[in-house]
Image 1 (cartoon, rainbow, N blue to C red):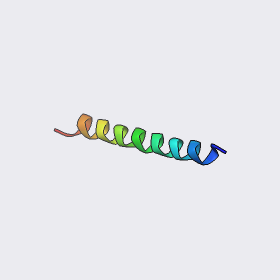
Image 2 (image 1 turned 180 degrees about the vertical axis):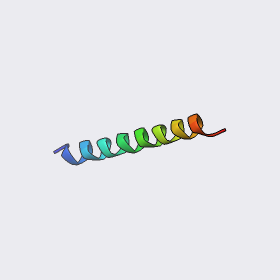
Image 3 (image 1 turned 90 degrees about the vertical axis):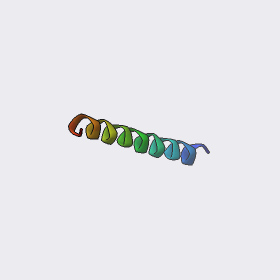
Image 4 (image 1 turned 30 degrees about the vertical axis):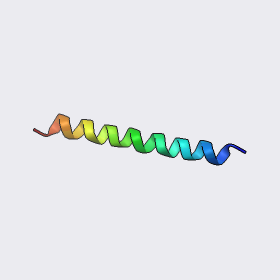
Amino acid sequence: MAKRQLLLFLGFALLVFAGAALLGFAVDGGV
């Protein structure tokens, strides 16, 4: 029943984690 919701949550969490990692990498290696 909540499989689709769990998948959506996992996808969203992965997107947020990737965005945070990208932002951290940009700040770390940028100005």
